[in-house]
Length: 355
Ligand code: ADP
Ligand code: MG
Image (cartoon, rainbow, N blue to C red; front, side, top):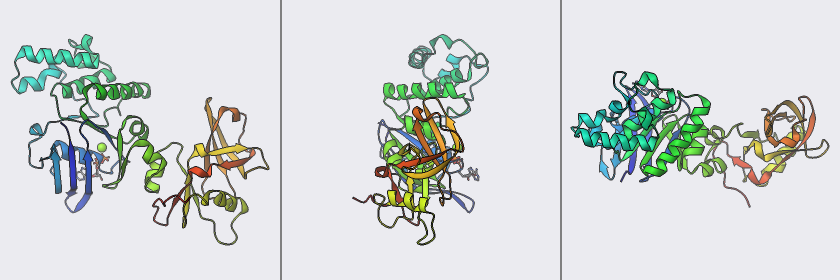
């Protein structure tokens, strides 16, 4: 079992409250991602679960047992950090077996466990090497191996892939998902990278300034974000946000765009969000007139940055490769897919969809 519950968790440093009341239930065996911008309190929350940081208020329950005052070693949680912190004078096998040795596990049993873990991580051939003879990705595997041999109820990962280059990060993302399936152990994974969150999480908790803005499956959060913060944090290029045009004097193109979206976005919307993939290009003279400020052709698709008269921000459109001859400065028509429009009220909260 590895079920973790946070009940009204708070953390203050002096008079500054950095965690402002978090309630969250992590299911047994779940892969949950804490995502949010730097400084929003992800690591602090993870460290409180691990017992490395005292909590200022609320309760932490692990498998239903209040863990607030339990020593880190008694919580059944194993943490993997961004910096691997391997012992340089120990081999991979010794690094991985060290915690077992410290808790008095006999040598033969230790070696068996390290061997099994190395097989799961596919690093058997590295067991006799020293950390200095490993690549970054291999070191991170060893650090994960060190956590696995302890057979924790819950793994806590704090941005474990941040030090790896882009290609290796993709590989390790796949590896960690595989590992999760194989072990079936609860994993709480902290990252500021929305792609990691979207691809790895069974569920995602979006953190912002010490609270959880929304908890849900990746697609729930992407398609029905609770507010503008979640809407803009997930998705690249960023979601387009269009302000309600003024009652009089607004540009015709701005008004036309708003009217094409607002029927589905809920009554009373002050802003409407539409993701770049829901803006399509049509010939000039059709749709809403727009000017291409910059065209980025990626081969398989193109990102167009567009000016619509009267709309404050540039809009982004993600279109298929058939539009790869569009150039900066060109005029085009825009066709929004209003079925995906998201209406937000004056406080930035998502409005219920209208029929
Ligand atoms: P994240 O991991 O999301 O980037 P952290 O949990 O590390 O954010 O930090 C949350 C907030 O708490 C930040 O504003 C940070 O400056 C503050 N903080 C973290 N540790 C301390 C500390 N020891 N003393 C004072 N403030 C801290
Ligand atoms: Mg952090």
